[in-house]
Image (cartoon, one colour):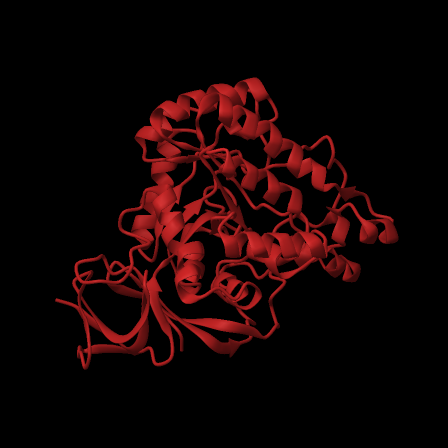
Length: 418
């Protein structure tokens, strides 16, 4: 029998916070009250105790790109960031387009045991955009979210077929919204900064056109649709309008789009190169407000590790993507300044509900599985080294407000700050 007490924290529930201890035994919360004791005590004084964070969008790179990250190192990074569940994107090598590959990812996650790892499935074979993946196999293997992330599905007719099939099953079609005919050869947002630098840019329209098309297909098929890493004010308006019309649409924002705008590119540091690119100050303001209001439902880290040798090149030659699992909670805490209940709704509860994860995103109470995070919202820290195999972070060396003190996964401590 294993027992842990989370002592002296502010336990966050749907109605607010209460200063209580939390006793965990054999993977379950058994009591919330005063003066509780156990052999293993974690000091939570001044910190929030809430449901473990859930990431609907992370790149763990396994199989095929383990020099960037693998499921073990990605799980360590997730646990260090307060996550108890993550969805692994399918743009691996080979792509997760069949049942045996999806089972491999979920089984590797279980073997590591630090967080629950759910594979997303590719919509098209090899993510090539020409033939549908083995959607039936993927569904049977437990996949519930389908995306060609890293690319949009260009063929509207093929996407419609996938939407119709997945609508009948109850699956989610998630889209990396980027019209590549408008972004070919570009490396940053199209605007005043790209013009000043003489660099070809990606217009906001490239994201918004795909979302417009997809929402029309959602209206036709009724499929559940999730807009990935929304980055423009126009995309926010499209999602808001779709929700007002009652369409089954959700959206996410990545932490870096809450923190930075395209002016950062002036330094030509590849740590700031990601797709969608950093947008304008007005776009940053729009996505922050959308996350506050709930128009954007959840935070997806878009954790995208790259080896140092890959990023340590001129900006134009660097791959896109930044890591984000270990800093996401602090970024949201500092940049959006949500109240504790809304903080956990955007980073945990809503994502767990969206993905059908019954053991995650549960407010702490007796009888609930012990998937929890202890988060000190007022504590500052400076990330220098990461649990991730890669270190391509724009937050490295920056003072951040809000620190994960401990993560509890299925009743075991998967991370505890030293």
